[in-house]
Image 1 (cartoon, helix red, strand yellow):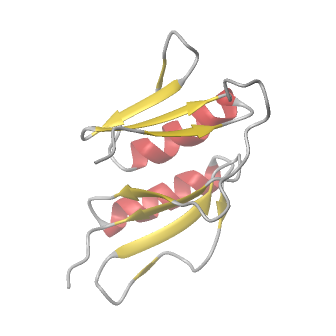
Image 2: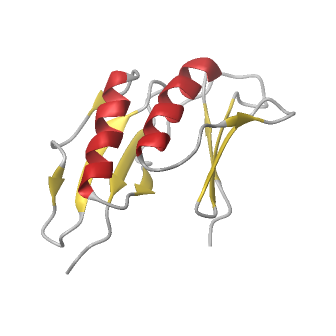
Image 3: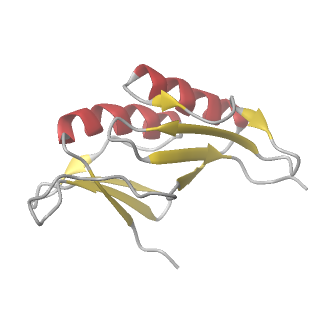
Length: 124
């Protein structure tokens, strides 16, 4: 259904530092800057793109929005969470844990305030 997710950042180098660390922890590759100045991550057919807003205004955070990232294992979720905290993110909600449906979940905010989650597939 989705081709990509685009989020705004007011500091692309800070965003690169954060997303390079967190997405590599999930098994992805380092981001690349395209000709239009957007930071692009490609993994398993999905694209996460980070850009300064094209209207010239400041990037703001979606109220109520969460970007969910798939993880192969609980170890990947934990590595993602640790990389996020180490690279300017903020731990939010509950600590990383298994949910009643068997998925292992963690939440952080990126340095621009976007809410992210990494989770494994449910087992039940």
